[in-house]
Length: 121
Image 1 (tube, helix red, strand yellow):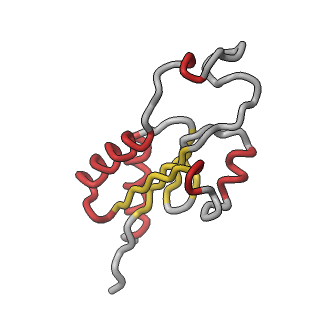
Image 2 (cartoon, rainbow, N blue to C red; image 1 turned 90 degrees about the horizontal axis):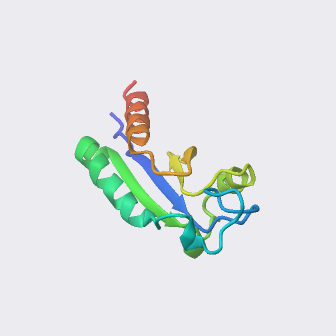
């Protein structure tokens, strides 16, 4: 009997290329800090990992990727996702883009459940 593979959840975050004003205001911003509170996506990813590990144990692996530091060479699909205008953070589940713009904990958890159910068939 083959061993089940863990579901891989990757949170990819980086600097968004400016497209004519920030996403939270229509007229542009004086500084990036003026667009609202700064979110530590690495810390949020660690929190997500805790929640998913509590529910799924070793059946899930969560990874944070800083695209500015690590680059996207290992994620060829990301070029297409970013060209389509989707904002960081991008959530990949088993290598497929699923969510963009925020860490959506309930939706990610549901997607992990669905992936695990696929693997048990």
